[in-house]
Length: 125
Image 1 (cartoon, one colour):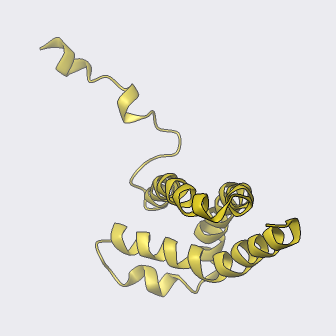
Image 2 (cartoon, one colour):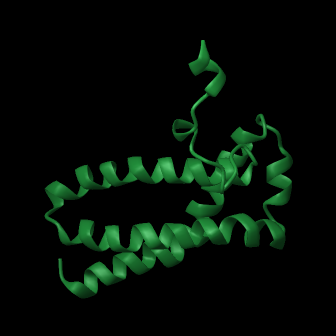
C-alpha cells in the first residue's frame, strides 16, 4: 500500500472509529463486567468526568499502541495483515483489561506485582 492509503486508513481508524465508538464501548463493556453486570456504568457514560477519567486515558493508550502497529500492519502484504492484527489484539486486550481493572479499583497502580511478592508465612511452613 502507498503512504497516503496507509495514512488515510490510520486516520479513519484512530480519529473516527476509536474515539467515538471503540474506546467508549470497550471501557463501558469492561466496567459493566467489573460492576457485576450493573447498569450504573451506563448512566456514567455520558458524563464529562467519566470521559476525562477513563475514556481519554484509554484513548491515549490506544493511540500510543495502535497508530504505530497499524502503520506496520497496513504496510504488510494482505496475507500477513490479519495474523499480525490478531497477535497484536491479544496483547491489547491484556493491556485494556489491566487498565479497566485499575479504573475499577481492583488493582493499585503502584502496588507490587502479585508474582513479585512472596508470602512469608507460607514459606515458613
